[in-house]
Image (cartoon, rainbow, N blue to C red; front, side, top):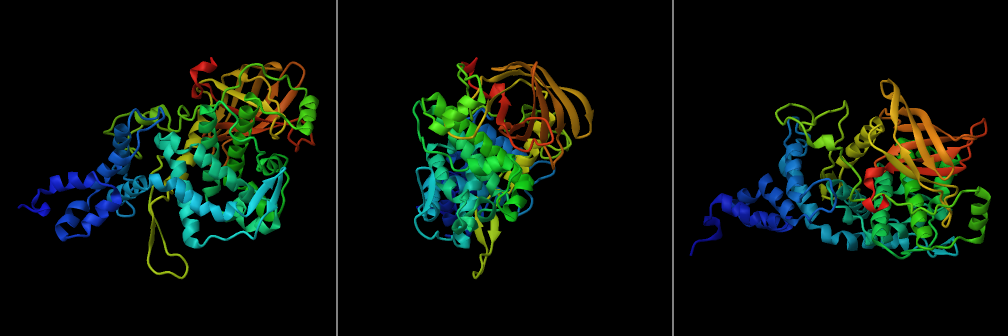
Length: 498
């Protein structure tokens, strides 16, 4: 009887490619013949394609088109994946990560349980139930890798990876990461997960809640958010200690707070629109604010429609030798595409290299270039948004800000002036005029919102989810925010909002 090893190499590779990545690796260890057949980028590419779930966003029509797009990116003219042994190890990393996708939720629960069980919320107070357990280097690396993996999937088009179960885990982690307790200082977000992971955590939290609330008709979780204090302090130019002040002033810190602000605004819109009740204190603030309460449903962006890669990214002449493939209308800085890359580290006290296939340093390149690309293109399409007086749960929000179409009035390199002359909200018609700094170190938007009788200064940051920031009364003592806003592309919303 013919043996498996007697089959042609091409057929062996087709058989192996239908298996999950761990099985391919195990098969390759059985003999030299199978090792040679399995040790191929094509095999791991096929495994990735077969085991990747169907996509849920509008970024790619199918997972086949996503894989073909990745082909151009992995093997493009300048070959950004040539480090770490090039395409083979890249596809291996992708195949291993996708094979572990079903384990993402239980693994997150296992890694976060020692942290979340140490703090409980009772009546808005954080109670330290027991001394928090510090994660070892291996567990901490795995947690960072999982957060990187989950934050990468929506950009690929698999938005439901950020779902209600992930949202619940991340919400439970918030009392630890945003705690004011001295005993938990070492676990605070600026110190515990480090590098770009605070940004990835905030992105996952917001995306998960948006996906959950879009599908939910009921109040999923009426508990108070615990990160509103840190966000408010950030926009009031306050700080709690020099270490956090350093984080606040960093680009990652500013972007993290902007994403957390978007989460708080979206959280409150969902809570109020589904009948959530404000506390007596918040009700008083609502009365004092004088906001005309919206009787128009304020929609939220649909995660499946948020554009994480510009449409021009997918077009162009494949024959041109440009960065990462050929993109028409290419800017100086092109948005990268986030692939997962191996994180080879040696934990303290251990020998050898440890492979975390969930790690994704390409996410950071995608985030920074996507934000800069969006900042340069604010004059494309219509913007829509909302305004809130406070960040407390139950705060009323005004009627939606609509009809915002920016146009550039002057341009000087990365800095340009814009105006939107025909915006409207509950306060009436308004104009927006200001300056955009689209440089890599800024991506800021400073606007003056002018009604007939009042002017408000709006200072925001461009994020992949839109423009998030705070409002101030013009003057020398304008460091305290009097409100908060979030603007997003009108096309990111469901048609039913029309």
